[in-house]
Amino acid sequence: MIQAMIDSDYSVSRACKIVGIYPSTHYRWLKKDKKYVADSKLAFEREEKRHDRIFKRWEDKFYADWFKMIEDIKRK
Image (cartoon, one colour):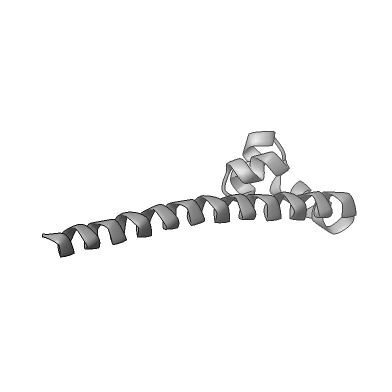
């Protein structure tokens, strides 16, 4: 279920369809299963860090390209 949540961009209904459970099962697990909650939180945090790294690489490249373009314009 945790991987399905990641794959479905944290859409509970889509993740539940992927694994074949009702959303109420997921919510029951959140209420009653501390390990499920901890594992879900850890997976979410890891995925969030991965997205942050991807964005940072994109941002670095964007600004490098932007500054290069500005320098090229200044030279002309």
